[in-house]
Amino acid sequence: MYRGLVLVLVLLIAFSTILLPWRAEAQAAEMPRVVAVDLSRTTVYRGYQWIEVTVYVYTPPGTAVTSLSGFANLSAGIVTSTPLAWIVPISPVSKTVGNVTYEISNLLVARVPIPFGAVAGRGELAISITLVPGGANATFYTYRFPVTILDHTVVDRARMEAQVRLENARALLAVLEAVGGAPMPELRSMLDSISASFDRADVALYDAGDVETALEIYESVARDSSGLISQAIAVLVARQDQARLSLERRLSGIEGNLSSAAARISALERSVESAAEAIRTNEASIRSLATALGNYSNTINSYLVALDKSITDTNNKIESLSRMIGAQISNVSSTINTRLDSISSALSTAQLALAVVAVVMLIGFGITGFVRKK
Image 1 (tube, rainbow, N blue to C red):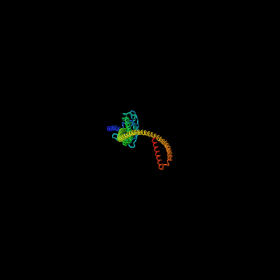
Image 2 (image 1 turned 135 degrees about the vertical axis):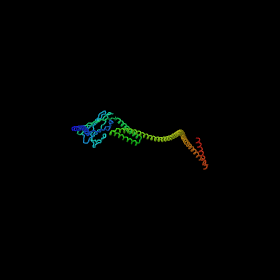
Image 3 (image 1 turned 180 degrees about the vertical axis):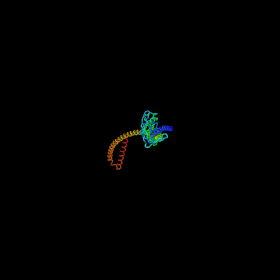
Image 4 (image 1 turned 90 degrees about the horizontal axis):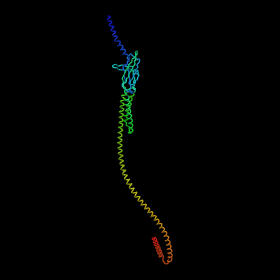
């Protein structure tokens, strides 16, 4: 009988030895604990990206968390420490770890910036958590994650190249529109679209930290800007060709007009030369005529002077002759009267008349002969 009791006691002691650790583990498993730590990324561009840290703390039903805190410590040539913020979501967040899904009602979150001063290459992000459950001692957790720090100058060069090509395209388009004298609406629309893409890349880079998307857009902007420049130049060249052809046609017409005008001018020159030659000939003739007229005028003047002198002399002679004739007539008349008186008685009236006529005729013949002698 005693042996049976001893056996039972031994079995009870053995079972209690096995059950006590199991109860202790079960009680520990029912305490609030960290079930997972997530990082948004482990490869980051310094200066432009950050790492989102999320710590999931599972709080079993009937338990509570008295205190929850933590830090995210980045080691990448320099050391930075970012505190974790304790967040209690309005509704529990489901988190699956392995094959188990937990309803999470306590979170620790932080955004860990990657400064420009971080050294490119390998780094480490250490997450330190302090959890104090209700009515229990604090529990400490430490998680270490390797991270890769990428050089930010790649992003700077891509953005700079895209911006420079975009500005070059904008300036060139403005210049070509001014030189061409006409707008290019299609290319202007393309330029606006490229500018909008560049703005979207900046939003992705600075606001969302999505460097990969930003780099893709920057490359597209640079490529499209170069294409726009080529198209703008091609359009300008085409317009210049059209303008050149139009100008050539106009010049051809002008050349034809100039040729016709040159022919007319040549004919006019020949006519002018002929007219000038005729004028020179006429001038010589006129000079000869003028000389002849001058000589003729001098001769006429001489003749007129001589004639005037002759007329004057003649007038003087006629006056002298008249005086002499008058005197002679007076004498003849006196003689005739005397004679007539002496013969009047002998002659009849008819005879007397004939005698008078004969005397007069004799006197006329005498005067005429005298004038001829003079």
